[in-house]
Amino acid sequence: MTVAGKRSACLVLGAALFVLPGCVSLAPEPPSMASVQPVPAQWVLAEPGATAVPLDRYWTMLGDPLVDEYVTRAKAENLDLAQAVARLRAARAGLRQARADLVPTVNASGGARRDVGDLASDDVFFSLGADAAWEADLFGRIDNSIDAARSDVAAAGYSLGDLERVIVAQVAGQVISARALAEQLAIARETLAIQDDTLQITRWRNQAGLANSLDVEQARTQRAQTAASIPQIESNLVAVANAISTLIGEPPGGVYRALTDAPRAVPAPPVDVALEVPADTLRRRPDVSAAEARLAADLSRIGVARTQLFPLARLSGTIGTSGADVGDLFDIVTGNIFASLSQLIFDGGRVRGRIEGAEAAADGSLAAWRQSILTALQEVESAGVDLDTSDARVAALTEASEGAQNAAILARSQYQAGLIDFQRLLVAESQLLATRNALVAAQGARAAAFINLSRAMGGGWQEQTSAREPSA
Image (tube, rainbow, N blue to C red; front, side, top):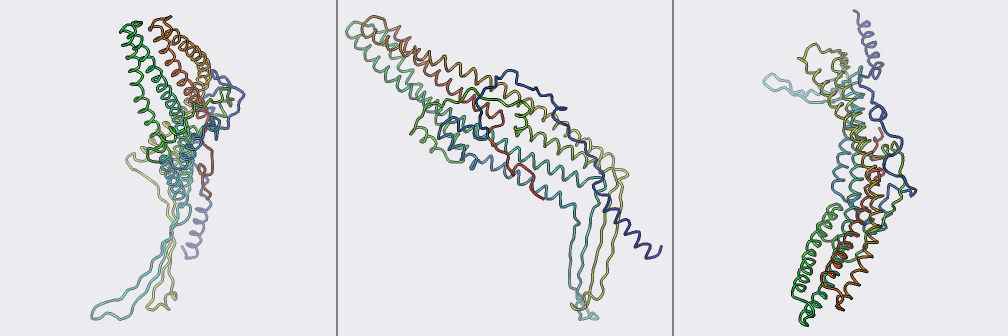
């Protein structure tokens, strides 16, 4: 073949290699959500209400300034979120690496040489050169790698959003728990003061012969039991406050002082909460979107593994020059271009194993996506019912607390007048303490149910550019 013929053949092959990339993809298409897991058109157990909740800031409806402050600080300072941000940055870096395979790789070199020895020349020879290599993406290996990296970025962004959703709910829920504990601590201290008076009155009545020693000992026992509960409540309050400190990224101490210096009642959340249809809720859930993105990444990796069974085309070339003087470097320039096509013949099943491994990983991601959908549906249904029942429980315990309060006042006055025995007073005061504590616990559970429902509906995060693919 003549030189012109060889040049023409090289040009034709090069043009073909530039035209072919991206025309073939071996990756399976991602399935739709409807084909993966049937979703009901309406909620079955949860009763939709009329109160619209701004899911990106639902915690503000609690009306507690500490909740607002600590949620804001957690979004900015939480160390788990900082780790998730770092993982998102790493995923973006992986996407940039995958995209770099689309362009040629170019390396430059240079050097200077001088011979030594008795017959060596004193001249210094200089050289410059460059190498370039490029892979023609005939069967989509590079495109599928980019798709997988792009899906990894999306999964990392949605995972960051999901972690933010969980941490916001944790901070709000822990503040609610701290408010309930602080209120129960105040109840215990108030009850202890009343029982101190009751014990003193019982001792006076015993000295006057109006009460026996059994009444005194029972009053002592009741008072000691209440006193013993106070250190435990204080310990629990410190533990919750320290957990909040960790969530907002600060050492313990400050949160506890803020909770005890300005105590507030447990906030009452809205209970008649409007619910979106299940499909809209699933689209808002970042954990469901992250699972879908992971499946897309694994499907793209199947395509990457399959391309190893097909030919690989490369185009490479070199150019160089040398001279005994810097001014003579570009007098003579030489170079070459080489196109190659390689095909796997036998590898003992290594590539087949990689394909099967990629398919198994995709099957696992598919199951994880279905699981995330079912978990989301379960959480909304359970939290919706929990919010409704907790409101009914608060209403019943409010009435019970009022009745117990009146009964305790009447029993105390009648005991002082000698109209009833100490046993009836003891029962009335015990019921009062139990119902007051139960009411506070129910109020905390109602607020927690609102937080859980808002979190289940995808509240607590806002999709931003950080959860999406960066610009090319």
